[in-house]
Each structure stands twice: as structure tokens, then as C-alpha cells.
Length: 280
Image (cartoon, rainbow, N blue to C red; front, top):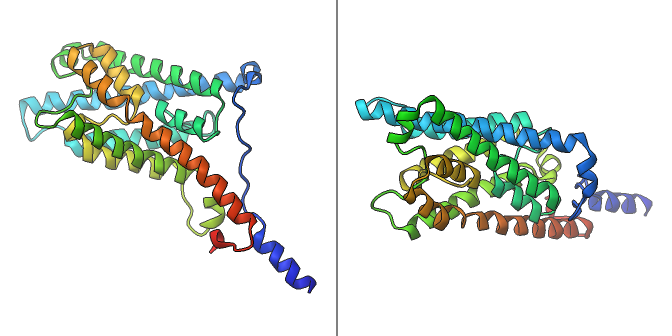
């Protein structure tokens, strides 16, 4: 009898540990150097992300204008975005969590992974980093930058704003679904036989979404990326498309944040029950 009870306890016990929910307001963070180090990491990471990726876009357009067979092409641009996300998330995950995207930050806030204060200041740091990163690109290649679109997101000719909006929402959902899945504390317990380096699937998600949506919108899925290019390029069409398109897909992250939080509660309840279906 005691053996059966012991086996039942082992079956229902959690084999993972969820971090406690972040408080809504945690003013104690403001007294910690690690908090400001995380802000610096988000600023620098977003700056580098925008510098490398926008420079790649401008370089491709310049080479392609002279010879349509030259340049890295859509595939190369997608690799630049996905590769930089992989590199930067890997480098900053242990410092700031490696968000590098205001939508990711807000989604994680809704899932109670970060506090409101941290979320707001992360978003400010990311947007400032994006603006500075694109500004550096313009300073290095000013003529090419101004004449070749500035790497700003715009709805491509032949596509309606509704089509572009749908593409951005789906692309953003793919990214956030991957973020929540790759950082799920249950994964290491449930799929311990499948080692996963979290930045890798996140980078691949960005890569795949860019392949699909570059021809439609240039691919937003990151409000800081769209905002930084729109601010520095400062033309009417990118601003119009930015307001109508690239602020709305953030709601996809918001929905996923709530979805992720709800699934966490449901799975926790299931793991504490007698069925043990999560472990199967």
C-alpha cells in the first residue's frame, strides 16, 4: 500500500519549477544595478540588431539596382534578421532575458513574466536603441539610405493594407508562439531527451517569417524595428503604414501573453491532478 502511495505521489509531483509571477509594480528593481545592466543590454542589442539588418537591406538594394543578379536577395536579408536575433538573444538572455522587441516584452508582461516598470523601461530602451542603430546606418551610407527607402516598412504595391495586416498578425503570432514554447520551463522536464537551445528556434522563427512577409510589408513583427526606421527615414508613407499596420500586430503578442498565462494555469492544475496527462 505504501509503495502504491509513493508511486502516486511521484506521478503527480511536478518535475519542473515555474518562476513565481512577477509583481505588477516592483520599485525595488530600481535600486539594483542588475536592472540597469539589463536596460543597457536591451539598448545595445536592439542597436546592433537594427544596424546590421538595415545595413544589409540598404546594401542589397544598392547592389541590386546595378545588377539584379547581385545582392544577398530576400534569403540573405531573412538570414540577417534571423541570425542576428539568434546571436543577440544568446548573448543577452542571461542579462536581460534577450527580448529585443517591445511586443515580446509586453507579451511577457501580460504573462506575468516581468513587472510593469521593467516592461516600460525595456520598451523605451529598445526603441531608443533601434533609432540609434538606424541613425548609424544613415550616417555611414547617407546617400544610399535616403535614395533606397531607408529600410522602412511599407505595404508593397499590389497588396492592400488588410492583406498586409493579416500577414503581420500571423507572422507575429508565429514568433511569439515560438518564444513562449522555447522558454517554457516545462519543456526541459517534458522533453529532456531533446536538448533545445532557446535562441535557435526563435531565430529560425524570425527567419521563416521574413521569407514569407518581406515581399508584402518588408516584415515588421517588431515595433522597435519599424519605429526606428520610420523615425530616421521620416517619410509620409512609412509613417502611415506604420501607424495602421505595425502597431496592430502587437495585439497578437498581447493575446499570446494572455494565452501563455492561461495555459500555464491550466497545465499547473493538470499536473497537480491525478490524471498525469501532461506527462504522457
